Image (cartoon, rainbow, N blue to C red; front, side, top):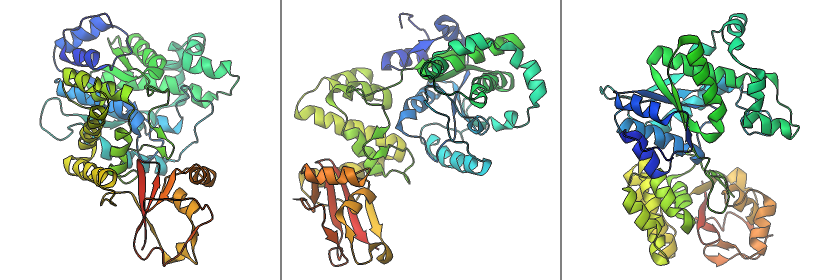
Length: 417
């Protein structure tokens, strides 16, 4: 980004590494300098929680509000019924209205930790649902009034669609409509709420540009788009995924301790970058911490984990996670905040294999992975090496909780309920 912004928001985005591209830096900067403005990011309700891959967008909305503007979180109650095809190899499973509403209820919990919806301030955030205007659309009117503004040739040229077709993977007409609906969202938000900016990951560029074009054509509105990079870790892995599955943001789907531990396991090369993106520490301090080496970089990783966990789960949960980690790793203890698997008497029966326990506790994704962990000396039972993949655990062994470990950094307790 060679443009030198005047607005505080674009300065923050630039300095902290949030910007991949913008449709018009000068125009957006001028708009942000002229008063309180509204911006939105859409979140489809495909699961009961967002995962850590969405955190960069949530932080963008948080900074937008902190710099004096009004964030809009748009829940995709309507668009989730279609499914975003962007950079996917296949069509998303179609969800019913009840499942979508349940997912939205779960996702709502996260946003309140980052964004202020309740204050009387002029820039208090809004949470909207695009089902409000999409569910009532008349198909023929929509085709005539909106569909005529879209060129199939241009839609096929967008990378998110082109990459799917180049691999000769099917793209249904249902999915093809998604970008038209998202464009319509932007126009409606501008018309109803004066929203001038849509933000999203760089995979949303085509959808955002469509919305800008439609808003200009139909209601002569001047709106803008800003995208963030699609983040991978320094070793090329996609953010939000681990061997144990997705890193969910809802505490009932991933404990604060496991969330803290995910960030504590950040590779050295990513510490400075993640501090800028996911915490509010000053940029100079992020750079200083990211340049540390040896034991000092481990302290920076613990600070990274605590800062991020504090934003999402609160200071008490972050401290408990840090204290548990210190007890487990430094003192060899059990820790009060470790993820815990509680088995019923019926589940235990006459006994359960250690391989099943490793999988059920989330330390491995499959029995095959658990056996490999044991064969490669990566599994421990109560801090002792675990070498027998055929070991059975019965009620006597669970007379008190046992601790399972995968490597040096991932642990879980197993107890009998």
